[in-house]
Image (cartoon, rainbow, N blue to C red; front, side, top):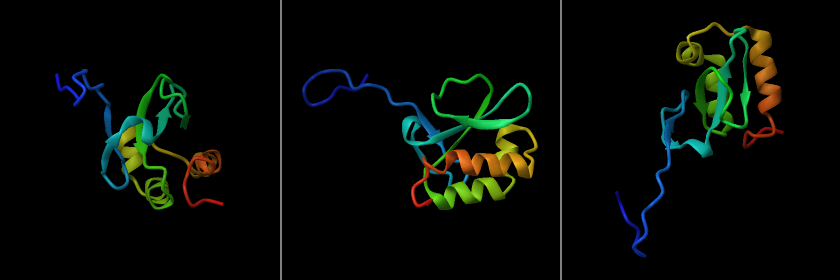
Length: 100
């Protein structure tokens, strides 16, 4: 286990990859989307909802790329309807940098 300069153990930070830009960063700095049992894809602000998850940077360009392309569908192993994509864009608007 790594130690900091003060001699205490450094806390482990889970790492996740953005589905759009493929950048690896701390789990808490990304937005999690989850595919529920019903097949809907929704925002998971708690990071604890049950279902298959995918992570996206809170940056407009990553958000647009993830919702327009197929990578999110591949990661979640499910199709996403246009209505569901629109709902995700609206619900995630407050969390995304650069969205008015």
